[in-house]
Image 1 (cartoon, rainbow, N blue to C red):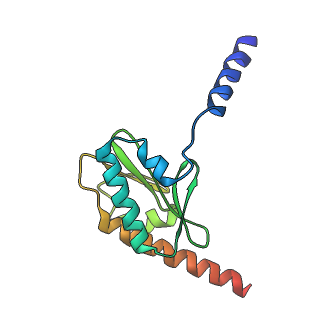
Image 2: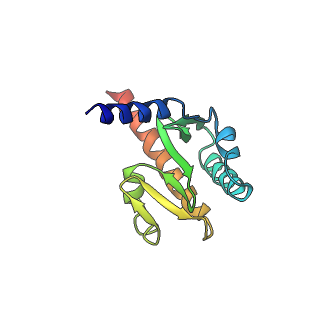
Amino acid sequence: MLNIFGKLNEIIMFETFMIIPKDINSFISTFPSETQKLFQQVRETIQKAAPEAEEAMSYGIPTFKLKGNLVHFSGYKNHIGFYPGALGIKTFEKEIASYKSAKDSVQFPLSQPIPFDLITKITLFRVQQNLEKAEAKKKN
């Protein structure tokens, strides 16, 4: 039993000292240069679709906020993860059918062209969704 707690303590200590980038530029800089270029293109695509959105780091990954969380993105060894929330995925399920996806995320393989037009469509949908939600809250 003591060994289990010892290991648990090591895991907690490790996670405590994990370095989380303070901003999107710092996050992007931790990846290889080719991936950095793709991240910058994803970032610019989101910025163009949602110019009013604010950049932030949330959950340790790049996040855009507009009346709440809008979209997030992140990077992995073989793909870029894009996180538009569950309704963002469900609404575009036909368009993302060729990609690996989950309830609230989609993976764009680095070995294929990144679908910037799809990222734009999904982001525009999320902008509309967040603005409608904020307006409904005002009325209540």
